Length: 312
Length: 292
Image 1 (cartoon, rainbow over the protein chains, first blue to last red):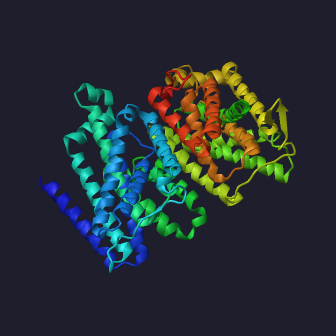
Image 2: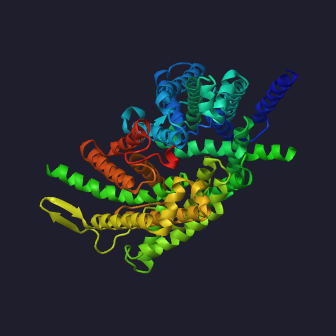
Image 3: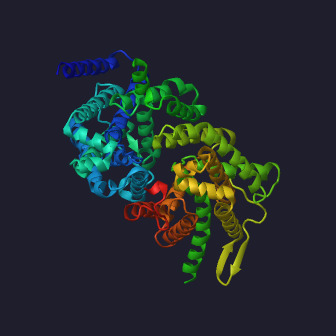
């Protein structure tokens, strides 16, 4: 109990410290922090499903895209409202739409296991991406623009920094609570041996659906923030295979074994990309690729796993 | 009626190319149980190899297929031995997938630096020739590419069916443990499989380069198409890859003619999803290693 309290207090202090940073930092570094929080948030959402159940989704960008377009269309409908209300409406639209779509596909798609689930999620993302670009409601190839909802008098990058940080905190809190709940233990049992878990009375289907819908819905909410921050979205910018891959890569680089893994991975990968490789744009992809190969071969349990191993 | 006939002909010819572009992927997926995200880069690499041979040395693309296959074979062998096998040994199926992705990023970057990201194409002297049979026209290049594709698939099929190494590959695919108990060096088999798969990817790339314009970033498309063809036809089955490719080619051509070009990809992806949900083993797939 005391340990739980300690973790909560430490986490709150850390987030409070992070929240004060925009007061000192230059705009460029605030934007780097913002990208780290967003990609960490996405990675944690993906990890909510994959880390607990070992169902590796290859198409989570579907939920980013759905959230982004839902937010954009909703903001169009409530263009006259106050910025605060607009933000709430956009976030809610992203969350709910993505969760509804996740719930609609959950039952058929979660019957598939292993590689087949992975490919099916890729197909879902591709179908949704193609559908969005084929129908003119979504702006076609021209895309949709979103209003600037940052309150006047506040720096835009600082506003989105705080927004992304708050969402990351919420997502991590949800994941942490799940990991300590009956649901979390049930999901871990599914990861270790789904058939055995089912025989022992774990409601595998229900648990998987819950994890899938949570993961998708939260990804959608983050997708709404992602879109608001971009200010202008097209099918290619939000239904992007590389977004799905980033979630996977960040989680594996950081380590799949714990909640901190995806966050550490996102911090490393995004940090390296934005800070170290900013001057090496031409070879950026190759270096990222080498980094991925190196991590998989040298630190198969990710950076978090490496740290655990040295402590032992 | 003529439109329908022409569409069907185009579909079958395109489908042949889709088939040959997927056999390497199918072999690797079926035998090693690895989703090879580097497949598309080997395809596009083959196209660029043919472009270099054709534009600097004046070699006909078809003549450049054997040497390019040899180069891709060696590259694939090295790639498997140095990078993929260590990842496979980690036991995590996603580790192998990620490593192929990392390899793809490096190769894509090098290709882009070497050739820039602009659109290239190969047009030997006999391109733009049309043969007519009644009112139906056949693109000569596509016809030739189709024939070459069939020849290559036939060659691979007889290699797997009749040669000693082919038998060993099939045995390892069925049961790695059983094969190893019979004295098979499974690691060598996997390296050989990956090398053969890469060689066929490169060969298909040459054929694709003769028919369609290409850029380095096209590699994603060909990996995804290989995915769809293999899932539709059945993992690890050559007949499945051919059937899946031709069906997909037909669907693609029919959608393009009767629904419009925007919908071709959507319909193809829907078919992938539908196959996965209704018959995950694919049309000709049996309970192969990867489909369990």
